[in-house]
Amino acid sequence: MIDSITPHERSTSGMAGAVAMLLAAALGTLAPAMANAQVATSAAPAPASTGAAAPPQEGEGAALAKKVNNPISDLVSVPFQMNWENGINPQHQTRFILNIQPVVPFSLTENWNMIARVITPIVSQPPLFAGGTPTSGVGDVLASFFFSPTKGDITWGVGPAISVPSTAQPTLGTEKWSAGPTVVVLKQQSGWTYGALGYQVWSFAGNANRPDVSQMFLQPFLLYTTKSLWTIGVQSESTANWKASAGDTWNVPVNVLLSKLSSFGVFPASYQFGGGYFVAKPQNGATWKIRAGLTILLPKKK
Image 1 (tube, rainbow, N blue to C red):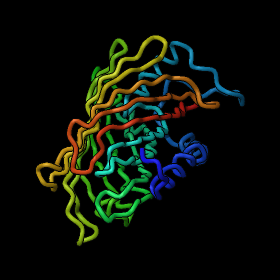
Image 2 (image 1 turned 120 degrees about the horizontal axis):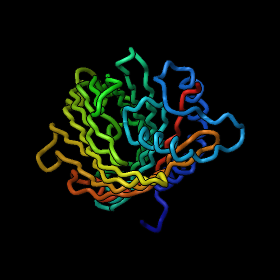
Image 3 (image 1 turned 45 degrees about the vertical axis):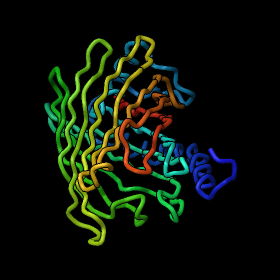
Image 4 (image 1 turned 180 degrees about the vertical axis):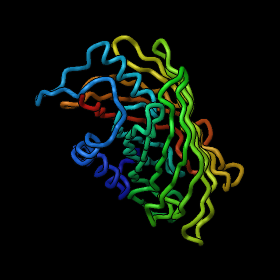
């Protein structure tokens, strides 16, 4: 970290300082709508008390922990994921990314669910090249829709992914509409969760002056949950930009994460902390990261 306070640092500090208010505001906005949605049946109701919720009981907690580790579970959840990516540009500065990524399952039939996942990144980053300026704002929003069977030893889902241009800042988004297939496959047994999620999108509309998009995302993961509801895991969130030059194609972090199931006010919640190292990265990309996260769970009331 540099000693003097740059415009980027002021922006990052302001962004981080607003996280608490953003969590409360987002929860207040999302909770009523999600609670009234036609969601699939989940294992446990939200606590009825108006006071702070007690941590989940062992049986209930184990079921909730499995659902937290499953990206397409039949449980409404609202993850807030905060990332500090370090080593950006030749000055090795820090980029802050807050990902707000609600997951809402809908029951289509007795045998099929549709799970909607939306990722909205809020970014504050330093200049990426000489002569550039610090930038803050919303990045491109990604919406994924998984059609998943309700039964089976292996959990899987497949559907479309759509990237929505949500900024005119050239360093924060593509200014292109993109779409393609997305798929997830995972297995859960004896406290273990392992599998992978991925998508590939291509641009089909948008600013003609911006480069076309052909990008792949791949997230393999391996998690273990203890009887005391701690979860430790290793995963990657690798991207491949097929339109970039050979040396800038891949961005591959290896992340180690620790989380604990507890409560957030009247809601059960999972708290996460960890970090990662980029084994491959584009020019001026991050070298390592720190992550903190909060996933608020909204079980359907019986």
